[in-house]
Image 1 (cartoon, rainbow, N blue to C red):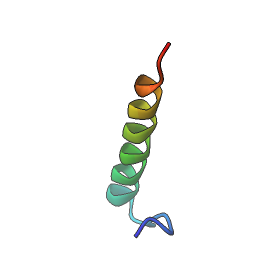
Image 2: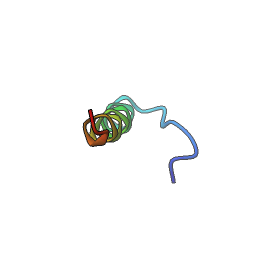
Image 3: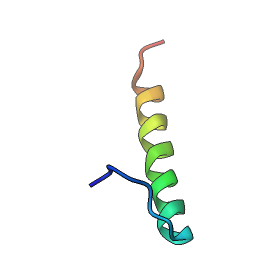
Length: 32
């Protein structure tokens, strides 16, 4: 259910946090 960004700030923060978490995981998962 990540088709849209919630308008409420708390949910938006959690949404951005999840995206940053996924990006971090992907970034660290890449072999250097």
